[in-house]
Length: 273
Image (cartoon, rainbow, N blue to C red; front, side):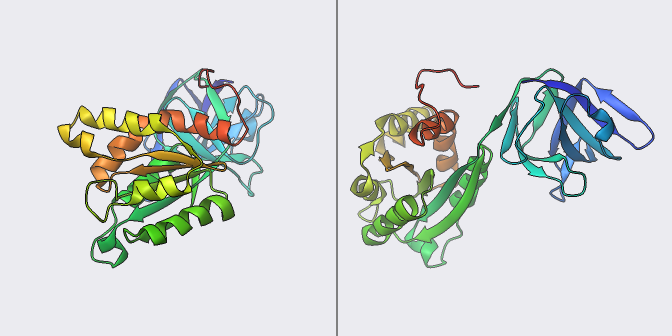
């Protein structure tokens, strides 16, 4: 599937672009080439349906779901149905440049939860930076972050929460930040081992390999990953910088792994769309 036209409608005139930049402005609204515009998804032959003072992508698909995500280049858009216009409305989750004829694809959302493991954070003595930062990054992959929590470094607290979110909430992905070091209170990897039914050693290895390029202390990280039922659970370092660096090293493969785990994709060796 490709973008056939990039349109901008100013009311009296409609412009056709070969390149655009789509992002979010300071007010949290969609920005198209620096101007606040609503952005719509249109089927072929529907350019005349583009509302005034808005922009739109005409794509080669004639039918598409009015929910989920659209992936284009480095950009990701959440799709919602516009009740006013009866069209699919796009909101950027990840900004970037989009040229004409770009390949694009529809993505099903997956569900996620973020757990910050910190004694001081759970007592309100430290502001949580890594949790919100990871939530933003996983949302940019096409996730709906349904639950967040800050808990103490306590095995007896973390294990039941992981079981509840995987078994009861049926989340596709759980990210735990904090508790992966050498301190006697660092018990997050052990909590994952206690709930995990399968280990995923490649995720921890990839994170340490990426971090080792930045600091020799990366070998001290005990970050790991396990599968419980149809939920992937990953532990990451507690500092915001380290958590984001580690997550970036494994993020490109996560959606494919989650779709295999959920039974949506069975080809482990297939190339990503």
